[in-house]
Length: 313
Image 1 (cartoon, rainbow, N blue to C red):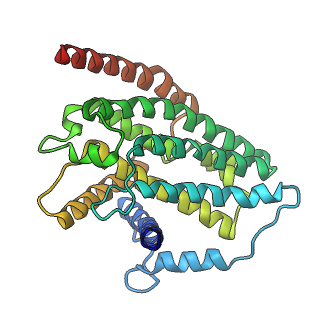
Image 2: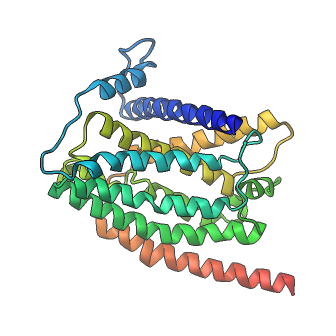
Image 3: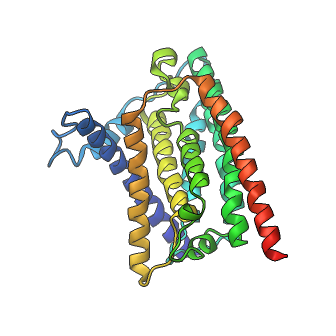
């Protein structure tokens, strides 16, 4: 029990540090893509900038909107942040203390609860901008969860297990991204939409919603929402690697190191996409999942089932 709690504490501290410096990577990456320097005044080339930003946010005065449902207003960021950290318990490392035999079901259940944190944050703020932003985010998240769950079934049918450890270790020389190339592309686009990232960041459309569902938040509340969003980006990159870019290596330490390098590359793709594409129209976003991703996923899943049925016959 003590070892498990200590392991969880170390994991959460590492996740918070990774999120902090991933924000620095994003700011520097976007700045150089736009031919500017980015943050470079704090410390050596701006490396301590995330620590300075976190200190500023955590020491600011907490805003208390008088018309808000105050307990839900305070609880929504904590709820979203807790769910983001809870998903990291599924990290399939060789040094993991907890083994989830039904890790895929746990991931689907916990990730589906993220819509409640966003909905509570927008509704409890008692602001029309926040409410519209939260409703748009909830509709977007629920829509893309349907295609995500269907895409999840592809590696599950091939491996025959609900454990992320088994899915990762079953990929030898040939990764699933080569066997399921169209499916892996649908998965990655769904991950971008699920995490409300550009060009699908309709929950935070500055031009029409000011800042979306978090417009009334500042200080610690905004920091928790910000941390939850970036922790979700990293965790979706992690599970993308596990599902489609996994595979055992000769050395245990090398295995975890290489997997983290793959996660970093995929996370950087989120930044690259943000710098490359403008925001879509909202109806285009919804048509993309209901009229393209869902039919394609169903047809490919039916094709996979027919192939497996003929193989076993």
